[in-house]
Image (cartoon, rainbow, N blue to C red; front, top):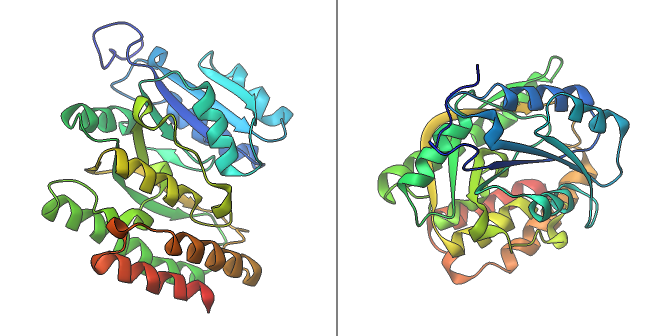
Length: 276
């Protein structure tokens, strides 16, 4: 028997889960199954949109798991931003989530995020805490590098929760992961992922645009498991340089609202780390 719907009206609201996909089908399958295992929400209220620039048989095959799963070829530029933009184009839900193909939402991710947005009708979106984990073989040295960032992310959300009336401080946009968030589709459906930042910061720019439409509600629960996978190019010299260039471009275009306070100074320091 399916769980009772979050709303008493059958099939309302519809939740759009957009997943930009590129290779690693076994991880994508785990993510899709974690969505289908959501509690306190009727699965008929969920649509899963797998979007990729070049269609692959492995991704298309996942549509056989459930009628809620749909597979789309990218309508825009290649890369995560273009695939997410494709998802926005096809999405029908009242709420919208951008999951990465290797993230695992907790069983109450959807229901808890909806509760937060229903409580805060002026918010454009909500962000939750997460718990990171590493795939087998991930180097211990690289884990140590990431630990301070994980701690700072948590602290930024806690500070925002306590000192900014439960809303994310505007300058803390870079301490969020897009996959840890839920948005009101009607508020953000016209926003664009800027291809200028495809090497780094594309998702942050989207969060900045969303904050201009309404605050981001902080949800004080760990509702997503964030995977650091072996073989990631994050720490290669070339990727670090490209990220630094992209982050620097984003920083140069920030409006005054996002250039104030401690979080902005921390952002500049964060960029310097990638410069080396």
